[in-house]
Image 1 (cartoon, protein in one colour):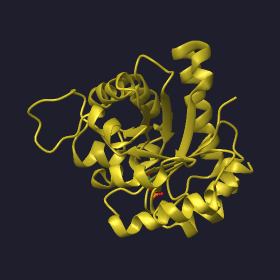
Image 2: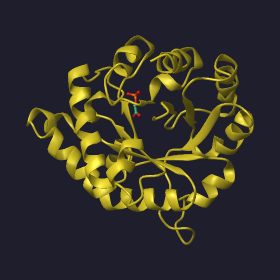
Image 3: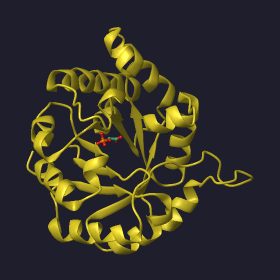
Image 4: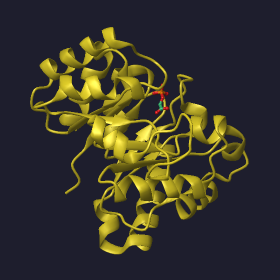
Length: 246
Ligand code: PGA
């Protein structure tokens, strides 16, 4: 049985004052029937983890470097994230793939490092609008999974995020989501065997309180990776509620 996961990605948003949103989220969901994760920007991880200490809220990071330490100015290792209180790390988000030219091989190396360092790795995949319109969605997802997934499935979460649905207000249809999630589930099972059944697959891309329940009703959707609607507890708490009662 896969425990559902509501994950928020604050991206490059949030200052210390915004940690009050986490306090409100914990108060709104003291014991949710699903996992609840917020990935704030790196400078807030330590303080966010202190706020979340002892609660049902988990704190994650948005990226990591694959190396354990060394001359990598501005980068952050998995051990540093864990030391700051993170339990999860997102790798291969489409904004990282685009803004920092991250390849599938880089994403895999980061996922391997995350898992080796005791974190859960949330590996993101998703097609562009041009790829979807060319009818290449499933081929693109297959190639990204083949190139980005780590060898070990035990601390792995996959997020399907169509690039054209991120931050645009455009949500994939339930049929589109179901087709890709079913495809990812088959790939995971072929690749990892029975362990692939335990990997959670999240949907991401303009998930909001108003569309969450429909998305969570799609087979093989084990939760959501939420950007904009995770910044305010008034927006995120209803998404957690929808998942907890899905
Ligand atoms: P969005 O972002 O919810 O703002 O569309 C999703 C994501 O990038 O994870």
